[in-house]
Amino acid sequence: MGIKAALPRYELYLYTAVLGVALIWAGSWIFEASSDNINRKAFKESVKPGWHYFGRKMDVADFEWMMWFSTFRNHILFALTGHVIFAKIFTLLAPKHRSLIFGVYGGLAVLVTMGWTFMALVLSHCIILYSVALVKSKWMSFAAGLATLASIKLEPYNSWQESLVTGSFDLQDILFYGGCGFSIMRCMSFALENCEKKDGNYTFCDLLRYNFYLPFFFFGPIMTFDRYYAQANNTQLTRKEREMWNITTKALLHLGVILVVDMFFHYLYILTIPSDMKLVTKLSDWCLAGLAYSNLVYDWVKAAVMFGVINTVATLDHLDPPQPPKCITMLYVFAETHFDRGINDWLCKYVYDYIGGDHDKIFKELLATFCTFAITTLWLGPCELVYIWSFFNCFGLNFELWVAKFFSLPPFSTIEGAMGEAMSRRIRGVFNAANFWTIVLYNVLSLNSLEFAKLVGRRLISKGFPLSTLSVLLVTYCGVQLVKERERQQALLEDPEPVKPVDGGKEKAE
Image (cartoon, rainbow, N blue to C red; front, side, top):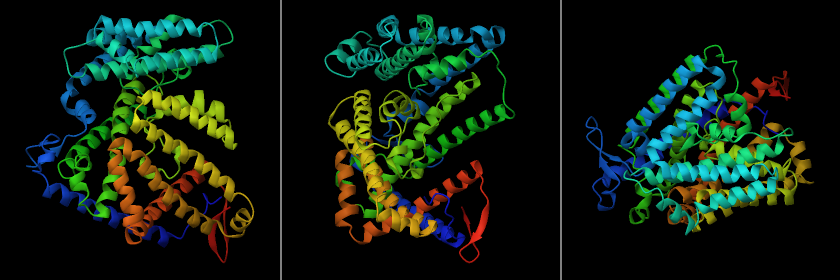
């Protein structure tokens, strides 16, 4: 109830103004903290000379961002450009065999980059999980897949396997864990889809073609086998109207975002500041709230750009890859929170939705979320920080259902039914605003540190009460209502309904 409730336009304009002023205010605090401490000793390793045009140092604390768009940019561009050219030529010459061409090019690129020992290790994982897939038992496929995944995530097995592929360049360990991890998840998808195949089995060649598709191999996203198999073997290769224009536009947009982020890193040291707890304790409540929020926004931007670049290449290959994650600003419920849509789709298809069904039963939901986050913990690599992150996000997902169930009972349901939809939306917005900050706090600990998350929590909940607490919640409430308005407009576009005057001439969508 309340998603189609329209609020007065002046109210939405007020929300926009409050949110805009608050973001500028918090940004000014972060800018001041960055400028005043630019030569701080603790910043020496992560704040380096930036672009000559700005005359300022730049925040380079995120290795992954620098790897993609600075240090190894040319290597990544060379590999992806080679794939695009190679794939395009052979798609025109032999469209029926393009999935084979994708696999051959990807396999050769992996062999040249990582060496034959890494290739042998990945092939051994493929052989083991393919052999299990022939049994057509889902629980055996899961057990074998998780055991194989554990072998690269847990000591001493991961160190032993990593020692087999020692290399001579800095990126080799990143490519090792990324390549092996994503490869195992793809093999599990293959095995589980083979269990669903009624007539015969998919071939080992099908697995290799799927697994060695280069754009997805090292960094994802994961595309489930059923989707990839259907799309890669489609010989009716046509483009939708203006599709190439859209691909070009998205590519230019990604380039623009990369430049904007790099420019921001010259003025806002959002990644370096949280690592210096001595400095952080001296910052204002608004600065801390801005840092926590901006770190999650940046992580979403990074995921959107990195997956966006890969997805652009995949779209050129006539594939429909998993889309970038939903912006953190648009999230106010745990059920929609994720930073990797490929992993999210994989977990939902094979674990969360499979066990949880319609997600309306408390105990089934508890079991589904427990199993989902158990696998996620193994995927991320078990450690204290991941355990804490998994526990709180699992709790948040279940707590939402418990609260929804509780307020669906009389007299709460009766009271909500008696009030107008607009008022219901406002009341729900208050709870959503509080929920938004639980999402921020539960996830910022995995991006920064547990100490930083605890400090932000104390400042906003206890030490900053009531002024900081209520003012931050007010700003968040304004943002939530703007998000709800966007969702309302999208819902009406997808399912238009007649709008008629009610309540003394005011318009409301029934």
